[in-house]
Image (spheres, one colour):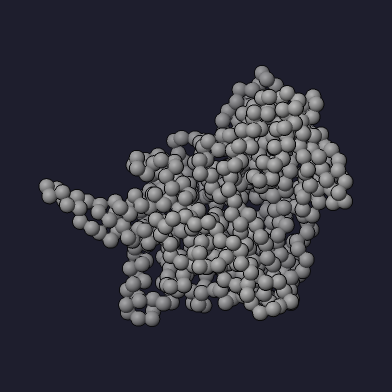
Length: 582
C-alpha cells in the first residue's frame, strides 16, 4: 500500500512512522522548509545570549552547551493525560524528566493572589508576598488558601464522579458547559440545605467561594493549558475539564531531559521515511489538489518551491493539516469523485468535510524573550507565571478574541512585538521561566499570548500559531471525521481529531486510530472481524491477539508503557471503555 501523509506536525510524523514500521510505503509532504514539529524552535547561544538561525533537522543541544534549543511552543506535558505521548517517547528513546511546576497567579487589581507549589495538588501552596504586608493581608491570604483547598477537594470529588458516570442528572449532560456547571453549583452551594417545616434555605458564602475559585484558579489554568480565551474555557464541556482533573491527579509533569528537544523527536520519527530513499520526505512542497485516480486511489498534485507541478498516485491519503486546509483539499476530491461516479466515497468525503466545519481555532502568539518586566515581584516568581488581565465571571457573555496589536514601543532595529490588548480581558498570559541547561547563561522566558508589550531589544523569537478548540459536540463530530469503510480514501489526524482538549496526546492518539484503520483495510475480508479499541479505532481481532502476545501495539510500540504505576492505572480504571471521554 502507498500512502501520502500531508503535514509534518507530530500527528503527521507519528502517522508516517507507524505506517512505515508496518511496512507501508509512505510519502511525507510538508509545505514548510522544516519538519513542522520543531519548525518554530529557537536556538540560543549561551556564550553571548544571541539567537542563531532557527532549528534545523540537525540542531540539538550539545553537551558542551554550545547550543541551547528552546522548543516553541512549550513542550511540557502531564503524565496522566498523555499516556500515548509518553509511550511514544519511551519507544523512541527520548528521555524525559519529571518536573512538578509551581505556578503563580497574578491579576492587575490583586497583584499575585495565589501560588501553587506543584506536585499535582499534593503540596501545600505558598502564600504570596503580599500576605506578609499586614495582619489583615495575612488573614485574607489564609482564607483564600482554605477556600481554594475546599473547592479543590470538591472538584476532585466531582471529577471522580464524572469519570465513573455518577454525577447527578443536572450535571451529567455531555453538552453542559463549564459556565453552566459553575452556575448550577454556585446556586446550590449558596443555599445547600433547607430547614424542615419552615422550608427556609439559609444563605452561605460557599457559592461565592466556588465561583471565585473557578474564575481565578480554574479559568487561568485551563486558558493556559488549552490556549483558550476566557469565553472558550466557559464554553468548554464540563466533562472534558473534569476528566482532565481526574486523570492528572497525582501524576508528574514532564519535559525533555537536558540535551533533547522536539528536533530529536522529529528526526527519530522521520528517519524510517527518509530511509525509503530520496523523495519520500518532501519539504517546500505544497499540495494543490486531490483527485480520484481511475481504478482506485488518489492522485496528489504537488507544487515544489520552483513552482513546478507533478503528480503522485497513492492508495490512501492522510491529512495532518489544519481543518481549514483539509476542507479545501477535500472539496476538490469530492468534486472529482462525483465526476467519476464514485457516489459512496463522495458521500463519505462530504460528511467528513461537513464535520470539519465544527472545528474552530484560536490565534496564538508565542514570544521567546528575556524581558523580565512582565513577571510578578521576585518573591512571587515561579517556573510558570499566569497573568489574568481581569477577573471575569462565568456569567459574562462570550466575547470574540481581540485582534493582535503591535507594540507602541519606541522605534527599534527589531520589529515591534504583537500582543492582545488587556482591555478585552480575554487571554490568560502564561510565562515560563527556563534556566539554561548548564546554568551558564541568563534564563529565557517564553510567553504565550502576551497581553502587554514587550521590549523589542529583549526578543529572541516571535511565533504566530493557531490552536484548535475542544469540539462542542465531540461524539457526533468525531464519528463523522473517522472513515467507516475499508475502502475509504482519506483519513484525518490532528489534535482536534481525538477526544478531550486538543493537545499533543490527540496528535498521537489520532495517528494511532488512523493507522489501525489503514492497516485493517489491508486485511482480507475473511479476517475483518473488527474490535473497537479504547481510542475508537478498529483493528482485526487476529492482529490484536498476535500483538498482545508480543506485548506490542500498532507500530510495534507498547502503548501501555506510558500509563504509569499500578496505583495510577487503578485510579484511571473505569467500567465503560471507549467513547468520547476516554
